[in-house]
Length: 310
Image (spheres, rainbow, N blue to C red):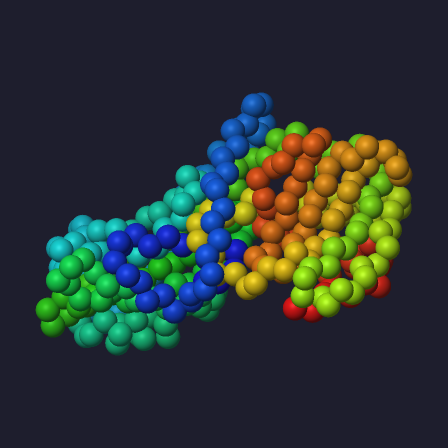
């Protein structure tokens, strides 16, 4: 499956899937944070409102094929196979809006036409096919995405599903947008962190190489930038992911109020497997975050280290 924004896919149909983007699966739990103060609640509400507006805009951007007619509800073809989306996020922070159409032509012809007429603002994220309910035909789909909006929207996707309906093609169009709930200050690297020690861990695939010695940084600008980098990472989306092999290579950032002081926060950036950051604040583990960039961390810190090759 594709990275981050489109990687939270769960098969809505119980049949065996022939997903074109398969791989080893990793599940992440859904994360829901409720604000304890008005400002945080308001921030979450604004993000949800933005998600609703973007879902409406995505649905409106669908280019109906020539001769297509809009349906008032899901068609009954193939035992109602298009009543449910072929893929859906497992997070509760999701807006999913759908329309249905009936168009001339065969399913793959309709999908091919859509791929050519989708707005250039979208990026193609993959093609999938699944078996429909027992006794029904296959369902094909194409997925397209818009860029995430940092700190507001985790993903913005247009999903087009097609199935044969007599001499025509039935179409389900989904606009799926997930928003990022506000994160309380207690779950962020605190502003009191004035020093950060960076260390590198080398996994089993590095042939016994020695990692570089840890380095402690006290430059206020660099520490602040590293703290901000971790604090603006969104929670890892829930669902099933296709991941490369993970060998335990990582960068560990230990934030302290002063060099040698107790750890205020520890962020572990995984350098292999699915990109993610494991975060500990005040000794308590937090939900994992969508991965930071190892090279970006090293660039901010001014370290000449090389990211381990897999």
